[in-house]
Image (tube, rainbow, N blue to C red; front, side, top):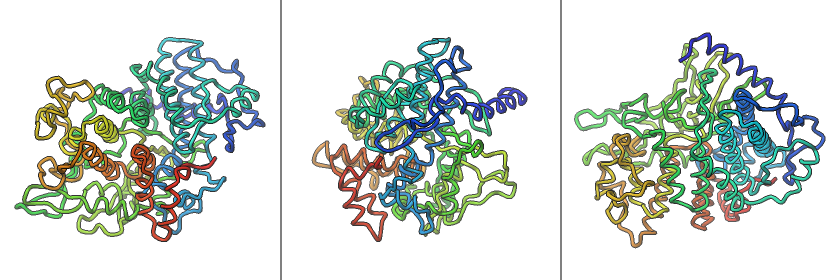
Length: 570
């Protein structure tokens, strides 16, 4: 850690950058509707001669500007990803725009969904930095170019998956005539867009992210980057290239030694004299602590601040109970089998603690943290969503206004990996990600992973977890459901007729684990889309989303049986 005065100087510089970068934005105003990306009346278009990048510091300042723009889409990312799913719901006092998203009746002026211009603004600024780097080629420019291409690809994915199509362009818009020409291009769907993005990312997948040790209000910007391999893995996963997806995910896991450890972020019931005591034991601060500042679980997050006109509303919407957990979500945790031993088990996944609460989270008396309420004997009506209170400690300080939302994290990476290897024909190994954890011991145990599925001697690289760094890996489910690795009764793959049946059974288990582990984080609707598209079964999504609705359940289901209704109308 650098000296305090050095850190303070950096903080002052960075805060000034957030304010001053607005003067070098390439496009400051974009509009929606028929994929119109540039307001031709806007005067906030910078000449290419006004800003050049000839040194590393120029790229640092520029990419900070892109980080600042990502703030504009964080609320939309979570709300479009979760309110349209089955785990997040609205309270009767929720504002009209939230209810519109929840009911798939989004109006043209809905601020959470009518902001496609914010996405294209990110794309355009990435284009600008990439083009300038190609001209300047200063020392280390490759890292910043790769970082911008990863952010651009991720942003394009959000446009296509939320709005149904995207206008692709990779040159910066620097004039009104350019904007007019580009906005007249034909939008392309995800199936056409994905190969373009894959071709862009493949040559740079081994380029390291920039070493970025700036810190503001406890947020380190090293976790603001989107790993190329994660984004590329997602693109392969969506396009059905499962071995390639698995390879990218596994390479990222290996390179960074990401693990699901039994001494980190695990919550267990306390047992006394072979009986549950009613208490809990938390390792590494418990599962809820993985959302705290500086958590080793973080891979990518978007930092926000309420300074300089950026507004972050998610924690307020949840604390005020406009956004609440659905009964479906609560029952998901309640109905899981917690396994202590062959003679001791009970219902309840302890990841409910840190996800939802019966009472509103409150500030500590010192104003420096958050108190979450839980009672193992009372799981009724736990409507308050507490994940974002844990990510962003409630505080009375007016200076500490920084907030984060988590985009990529370690458990999500392992679950995406499990999804890929399962569809690549390895259901037992995919199930081991959930139940046992991947390690040399797991791979060599043929009761877990049969020889006919994975040859532990001549194992392909994308399945190889025999390195010592993975020795202490545990199953993701063990974070909240006890010793499921010892269970031979409840959490097993039953004998099924065909291998395809086993693959779909395990895929359902992965889908359920995503709901238990990553609820409310912004992924749910797209996860359900991906599973439904893969199976060519619209009901897979429609039934699950409709299940949280009561008064209009059939209307929602009927609407979602038509795939066009999965997308926001532009």
